[in-house]
Image (tube, rainbow, N blue to C red; front, side, top):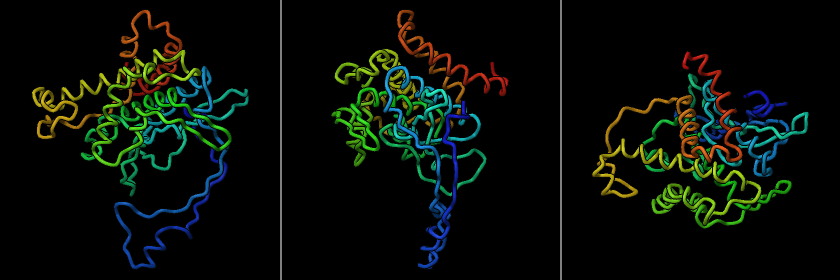
Length: 313
């Protein structure tokens, strides 16, 4: 699930003469313990293409290969933390089939290894709802489920956005509702972003039409989006007293927040819950929808090595 699904580095070299530590030394500044210094790094690898250059079955397979790879990396202590439509790529295999590649690990963290990078990683347009709704300000720990949710926002965006990719040129047609995801200058825009995501399962396939190349997967994707809205509704019921939640509408006051112990990261449980809940949302008739059976099989196969190792059945 990992080998062949991450970039293969052919050559790498740090150009230390261009490190920002030289600037700090010249100015007589002490190293910043919180941010450290930056060094120019040259990396040579195969040229990869973005997954939105694909559609149909090829896109569907490549996307979920990236999800499975990301999960296996996470349970092995490598947390990507920046799932974006520009970081999910593909390469062409020896059989000339596209293969999903999880790219851009420069902001990833490794469990058990200290880092001077304390920036909150994550691309705002695809960030999980609770990270947007106070999580960034409260600096809540990034969990596996946050990245998993980001995958679904990437999936939703690619399938409704009219993205034209040719060579190295990208042209994206504007989408009024989705454009709010890319605006984060001020609380009003942040609230509009959150509201758009909370209602997106209703608009998906309606006011937000699905592009032809992904149309056969629209029902499955819609239920996956709905899963995250329902998840966050349940999360709000836990974190806020019900009365404060009713008074606060879409933005309950922080004074009404219930103080809970920090949430424990449970990647295996989170992924299993996602699969089983989407399956229930689809119902018996929906289980025949194109795409879900393949996704379920692939993700359960990705989970099994972790459950066997951890002794969880």
